[in-house]
Image 1: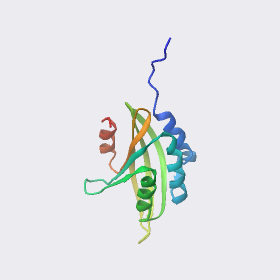
Image 2 (image 1 turned 45 degrees about the horizontal axis):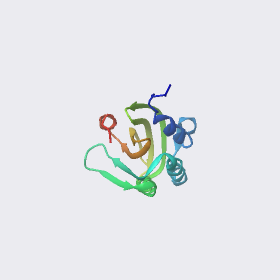
Image 3 (image 1 turned 90 degrees about the vertical axis):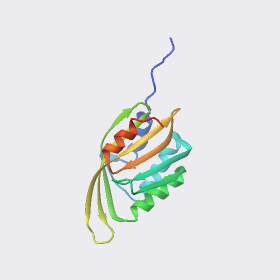
Image 4 (image 1 turned 30 degrees about the horizontal axis):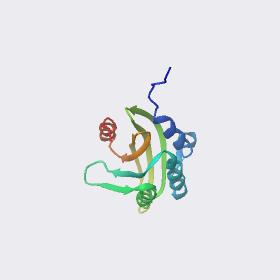
Length: 149
């Protein structure tokens, strides 16, 4: 009898993220970003696209490939002296996976602490990560997770 059960994209994604989120949290720096990109390599399409989306539609950064993922995170980290992400859970929506995190950052200029609930949408097609979106607005992230790539 052939196994026709759908393979979950969450499994390989969660294994990859577990190398970054030890104990469900991570202090994010350049080394962590490099490790994240490398752990995503086996499950990603070579032309994977990353989007960073602010809480409104005025900011959207688009980056291509795993080098783009590293560059996008490096751009984002420039604003902060320190950033900590706490993993809060995930949901599957068809082929897509949404992960929820709480971000806490200390701004580089002024030393202001900023806390922000956020989410990432990991969009897969044919078992490969094709697009990842980092959202500051969880409702927009959830709407995107429900749309196939």
